[in-house]
Length: 260
Image 1 (cartoon, rainbow, N blue to C red):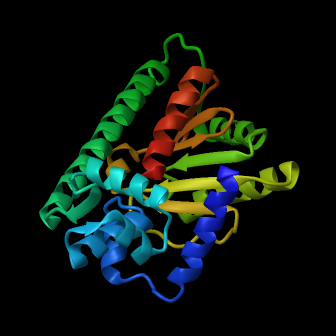
Image 2: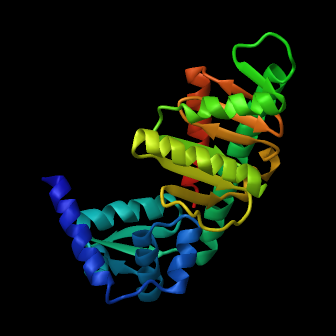
């Protein structure tokens, strides 16, 4: 029942918002981490000042429980102040200077993720490119690269995550061909690619792309995550099949992907 109410409320909200197109300032607020509803409510508070919560709900066409939840999130971010006057709850927007705190927190989180990725990549390179005993398979040379990509093409995973896809058109075309073959074999797949700098839209509809400049330091190689993790650097690479390691790398990829 709660899910039906939430769906109904969201439908009313978006129908109402068709009459109020998203403004440039709302887009900017969303870029630094605010949701669409958070941005709209924060701007309403900046415009109207200290007002009762029920007025906010009417202004943005949302139920009071939803507004309370969003206000709690805004308060956690330091963007609003609540107070109670004669049994009426009022809310006021804090100075826009507080937005800088959100940017700094977001930057720290990205830096932490980057350090963790660098640490993992360093460990993997030391362990698996060193030529000593290891738990995974190493490949080198053109024949090795061919075997590695054949290994990837046999994946049973419907989700493929790619960090730092090849920037050489010929190498990417080779990867794209494998994508198509996997899709033909499995019927349906979703591919997410993260690039260190802006790139063009994917030509294949099942590929989603995002840009994360913070990963530029680890883009000396391409990292492919499916039911295995594959690292490819020029004509050498390795395949990881250790589930815990794959899960860790997948989690870090998803954390970077979720960054706005």
